[in-house]
Length: 358
Image 1: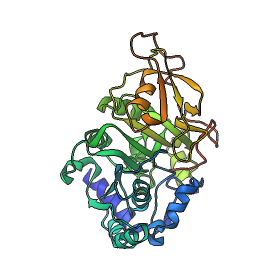
Image 2: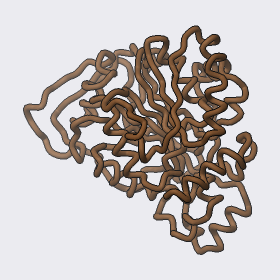
Image 3: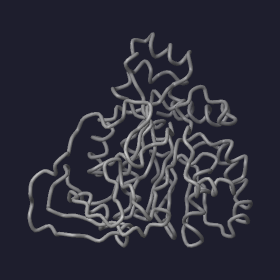
Image 4: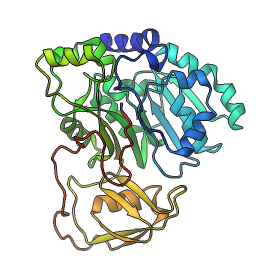
């Protein structure tokens, strides 16, 4: 594990100077973020933005005013400074990274951003995501934990997820983007430092990830959006193909994992919810995950887990709730376990990915 950490730190601290130095498009963003995120990025120092190696939008789409946020693998701090603006003066954001060069950039511009935003609410810590206990962060102290194409770089992903569960408040969530594969990545590819540094060979097989999430206590992982990764590097593609792994495919995917007492499967209790249209920037409807878009004013039947995700979290005030837990009607129709990602170039469905890749 230590050798891999040193290799990753060297790759992101010394080899990569800006995002233009990446050898593949696995750690890039193809789609434009929403306007309010673009407006937030405009206020961030250009050096911080140039050293951004993440993917897509890794911030939940609801009112985060006053929230406590932890960014795992924060790098030079772009997402930390976006979150800083969203949580405001009453919130806080902590960024954790193991790379000195990245943290130096993030810290160098703290005063710049404090003056730009009108408040100071960020902190940067050096540490390993597998060993967050060493940073003495208060258990159950964060509303949201975010991570942008970083957990795949960790060798002990189970330890990372365990730490996230420990640090989240009840009703909080891990909302993050990462790279996943359609099958298990062979060991000989995992040992390729460039493929690992480019966020490919450290990717988990999607079903292993979902089972691992359930094992540590995130009982019902929800896929928010996804997109196929087109490597767009002939040398890397040839390396994968010539090793006998041409059928190995990678996907960028954003998941949300709630710290809630959820059931292993979607169970039907005859419940329903109605979205009030009150979330800022989402008057017409709001997307919980890839299979749950709530149109304003419409009655939506939901399983017990979805009901809890809305009723026992920061989202409660934005929904009306119908039903209770008195009667169980069996498994909720449509609960499945096949490959969850879209195989076409563009994801489908309301609120789906705009092409961001990781």
